[in-house]
Length: 118
Image (cartoon, rainbow, N blue to C red; front, top):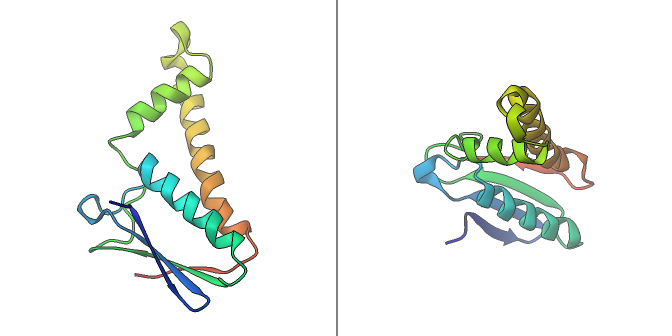
């Protein structure tokens, strides 16, 4: 099952976050699929507008809380880990926040309009 449904109507593309039982939380897999779809949207000259929508009762709950401890551990290891790993939690959290912001910023910095709908 795809976590991002892709619907095209003329020059308008609608990307529907499709994990309603988890309120479309931004898991690693969902973020990856969304990034792939967005790159496809940007590459196609026939698509002019992207509408982001969420399946179910919520557009998007935000970050996937169940994955955050795993992602935090990976960030600690990336930043050097070792005995000071827990002392560097603030740095690891900033790294994760910056990483997520980069993905979100891509939607605002591209040349085509993007809208959020529900």
